[in-house]
Image (cartoon, rainbow, N blue to C red; front, side, top):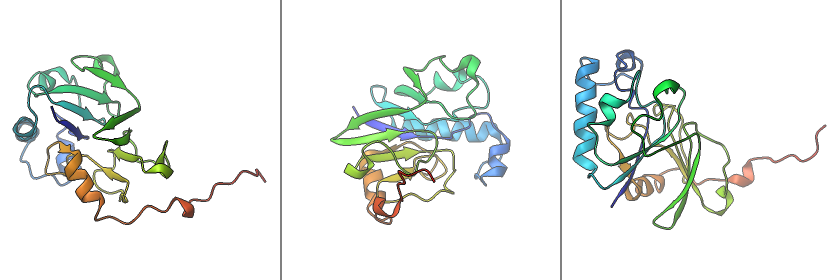
Length: 177
């Protein structure tokens, strides 16, 4: 069983093609390509963590066609009336360990996170590749990963090419002047 990460598929959202310069002629073409690329990587018994903005409307027509045990970290475009439909779990934030790596999952990119000083990783979406990561954090959205979910080994390889995280440069003030 493999664990996959992704974000910001925006199934059914025609305007996202223009907003993010996606290479699709229509929302239907984008939907079909996203489904094919997802299922090309994800096996039925794999686990997928989707970090929000899954679909423009009801997620069920898309969820039913996707392989894997699908978990949602809520984004800002989730239709709340149908957010629980078809997901293995739904939460606004998640901490988990995968292959010895402690990982923080949130739709939004964080400057600091639990255990970041001890090497914890942080995966996020929302920014569609516009928020640079560092050696411990990156955008796992489809716009950054060829419109498909990404695995931890591939993410680790990518993180190794990024600027080293320097938490000492982040000033923590305890006095409230």
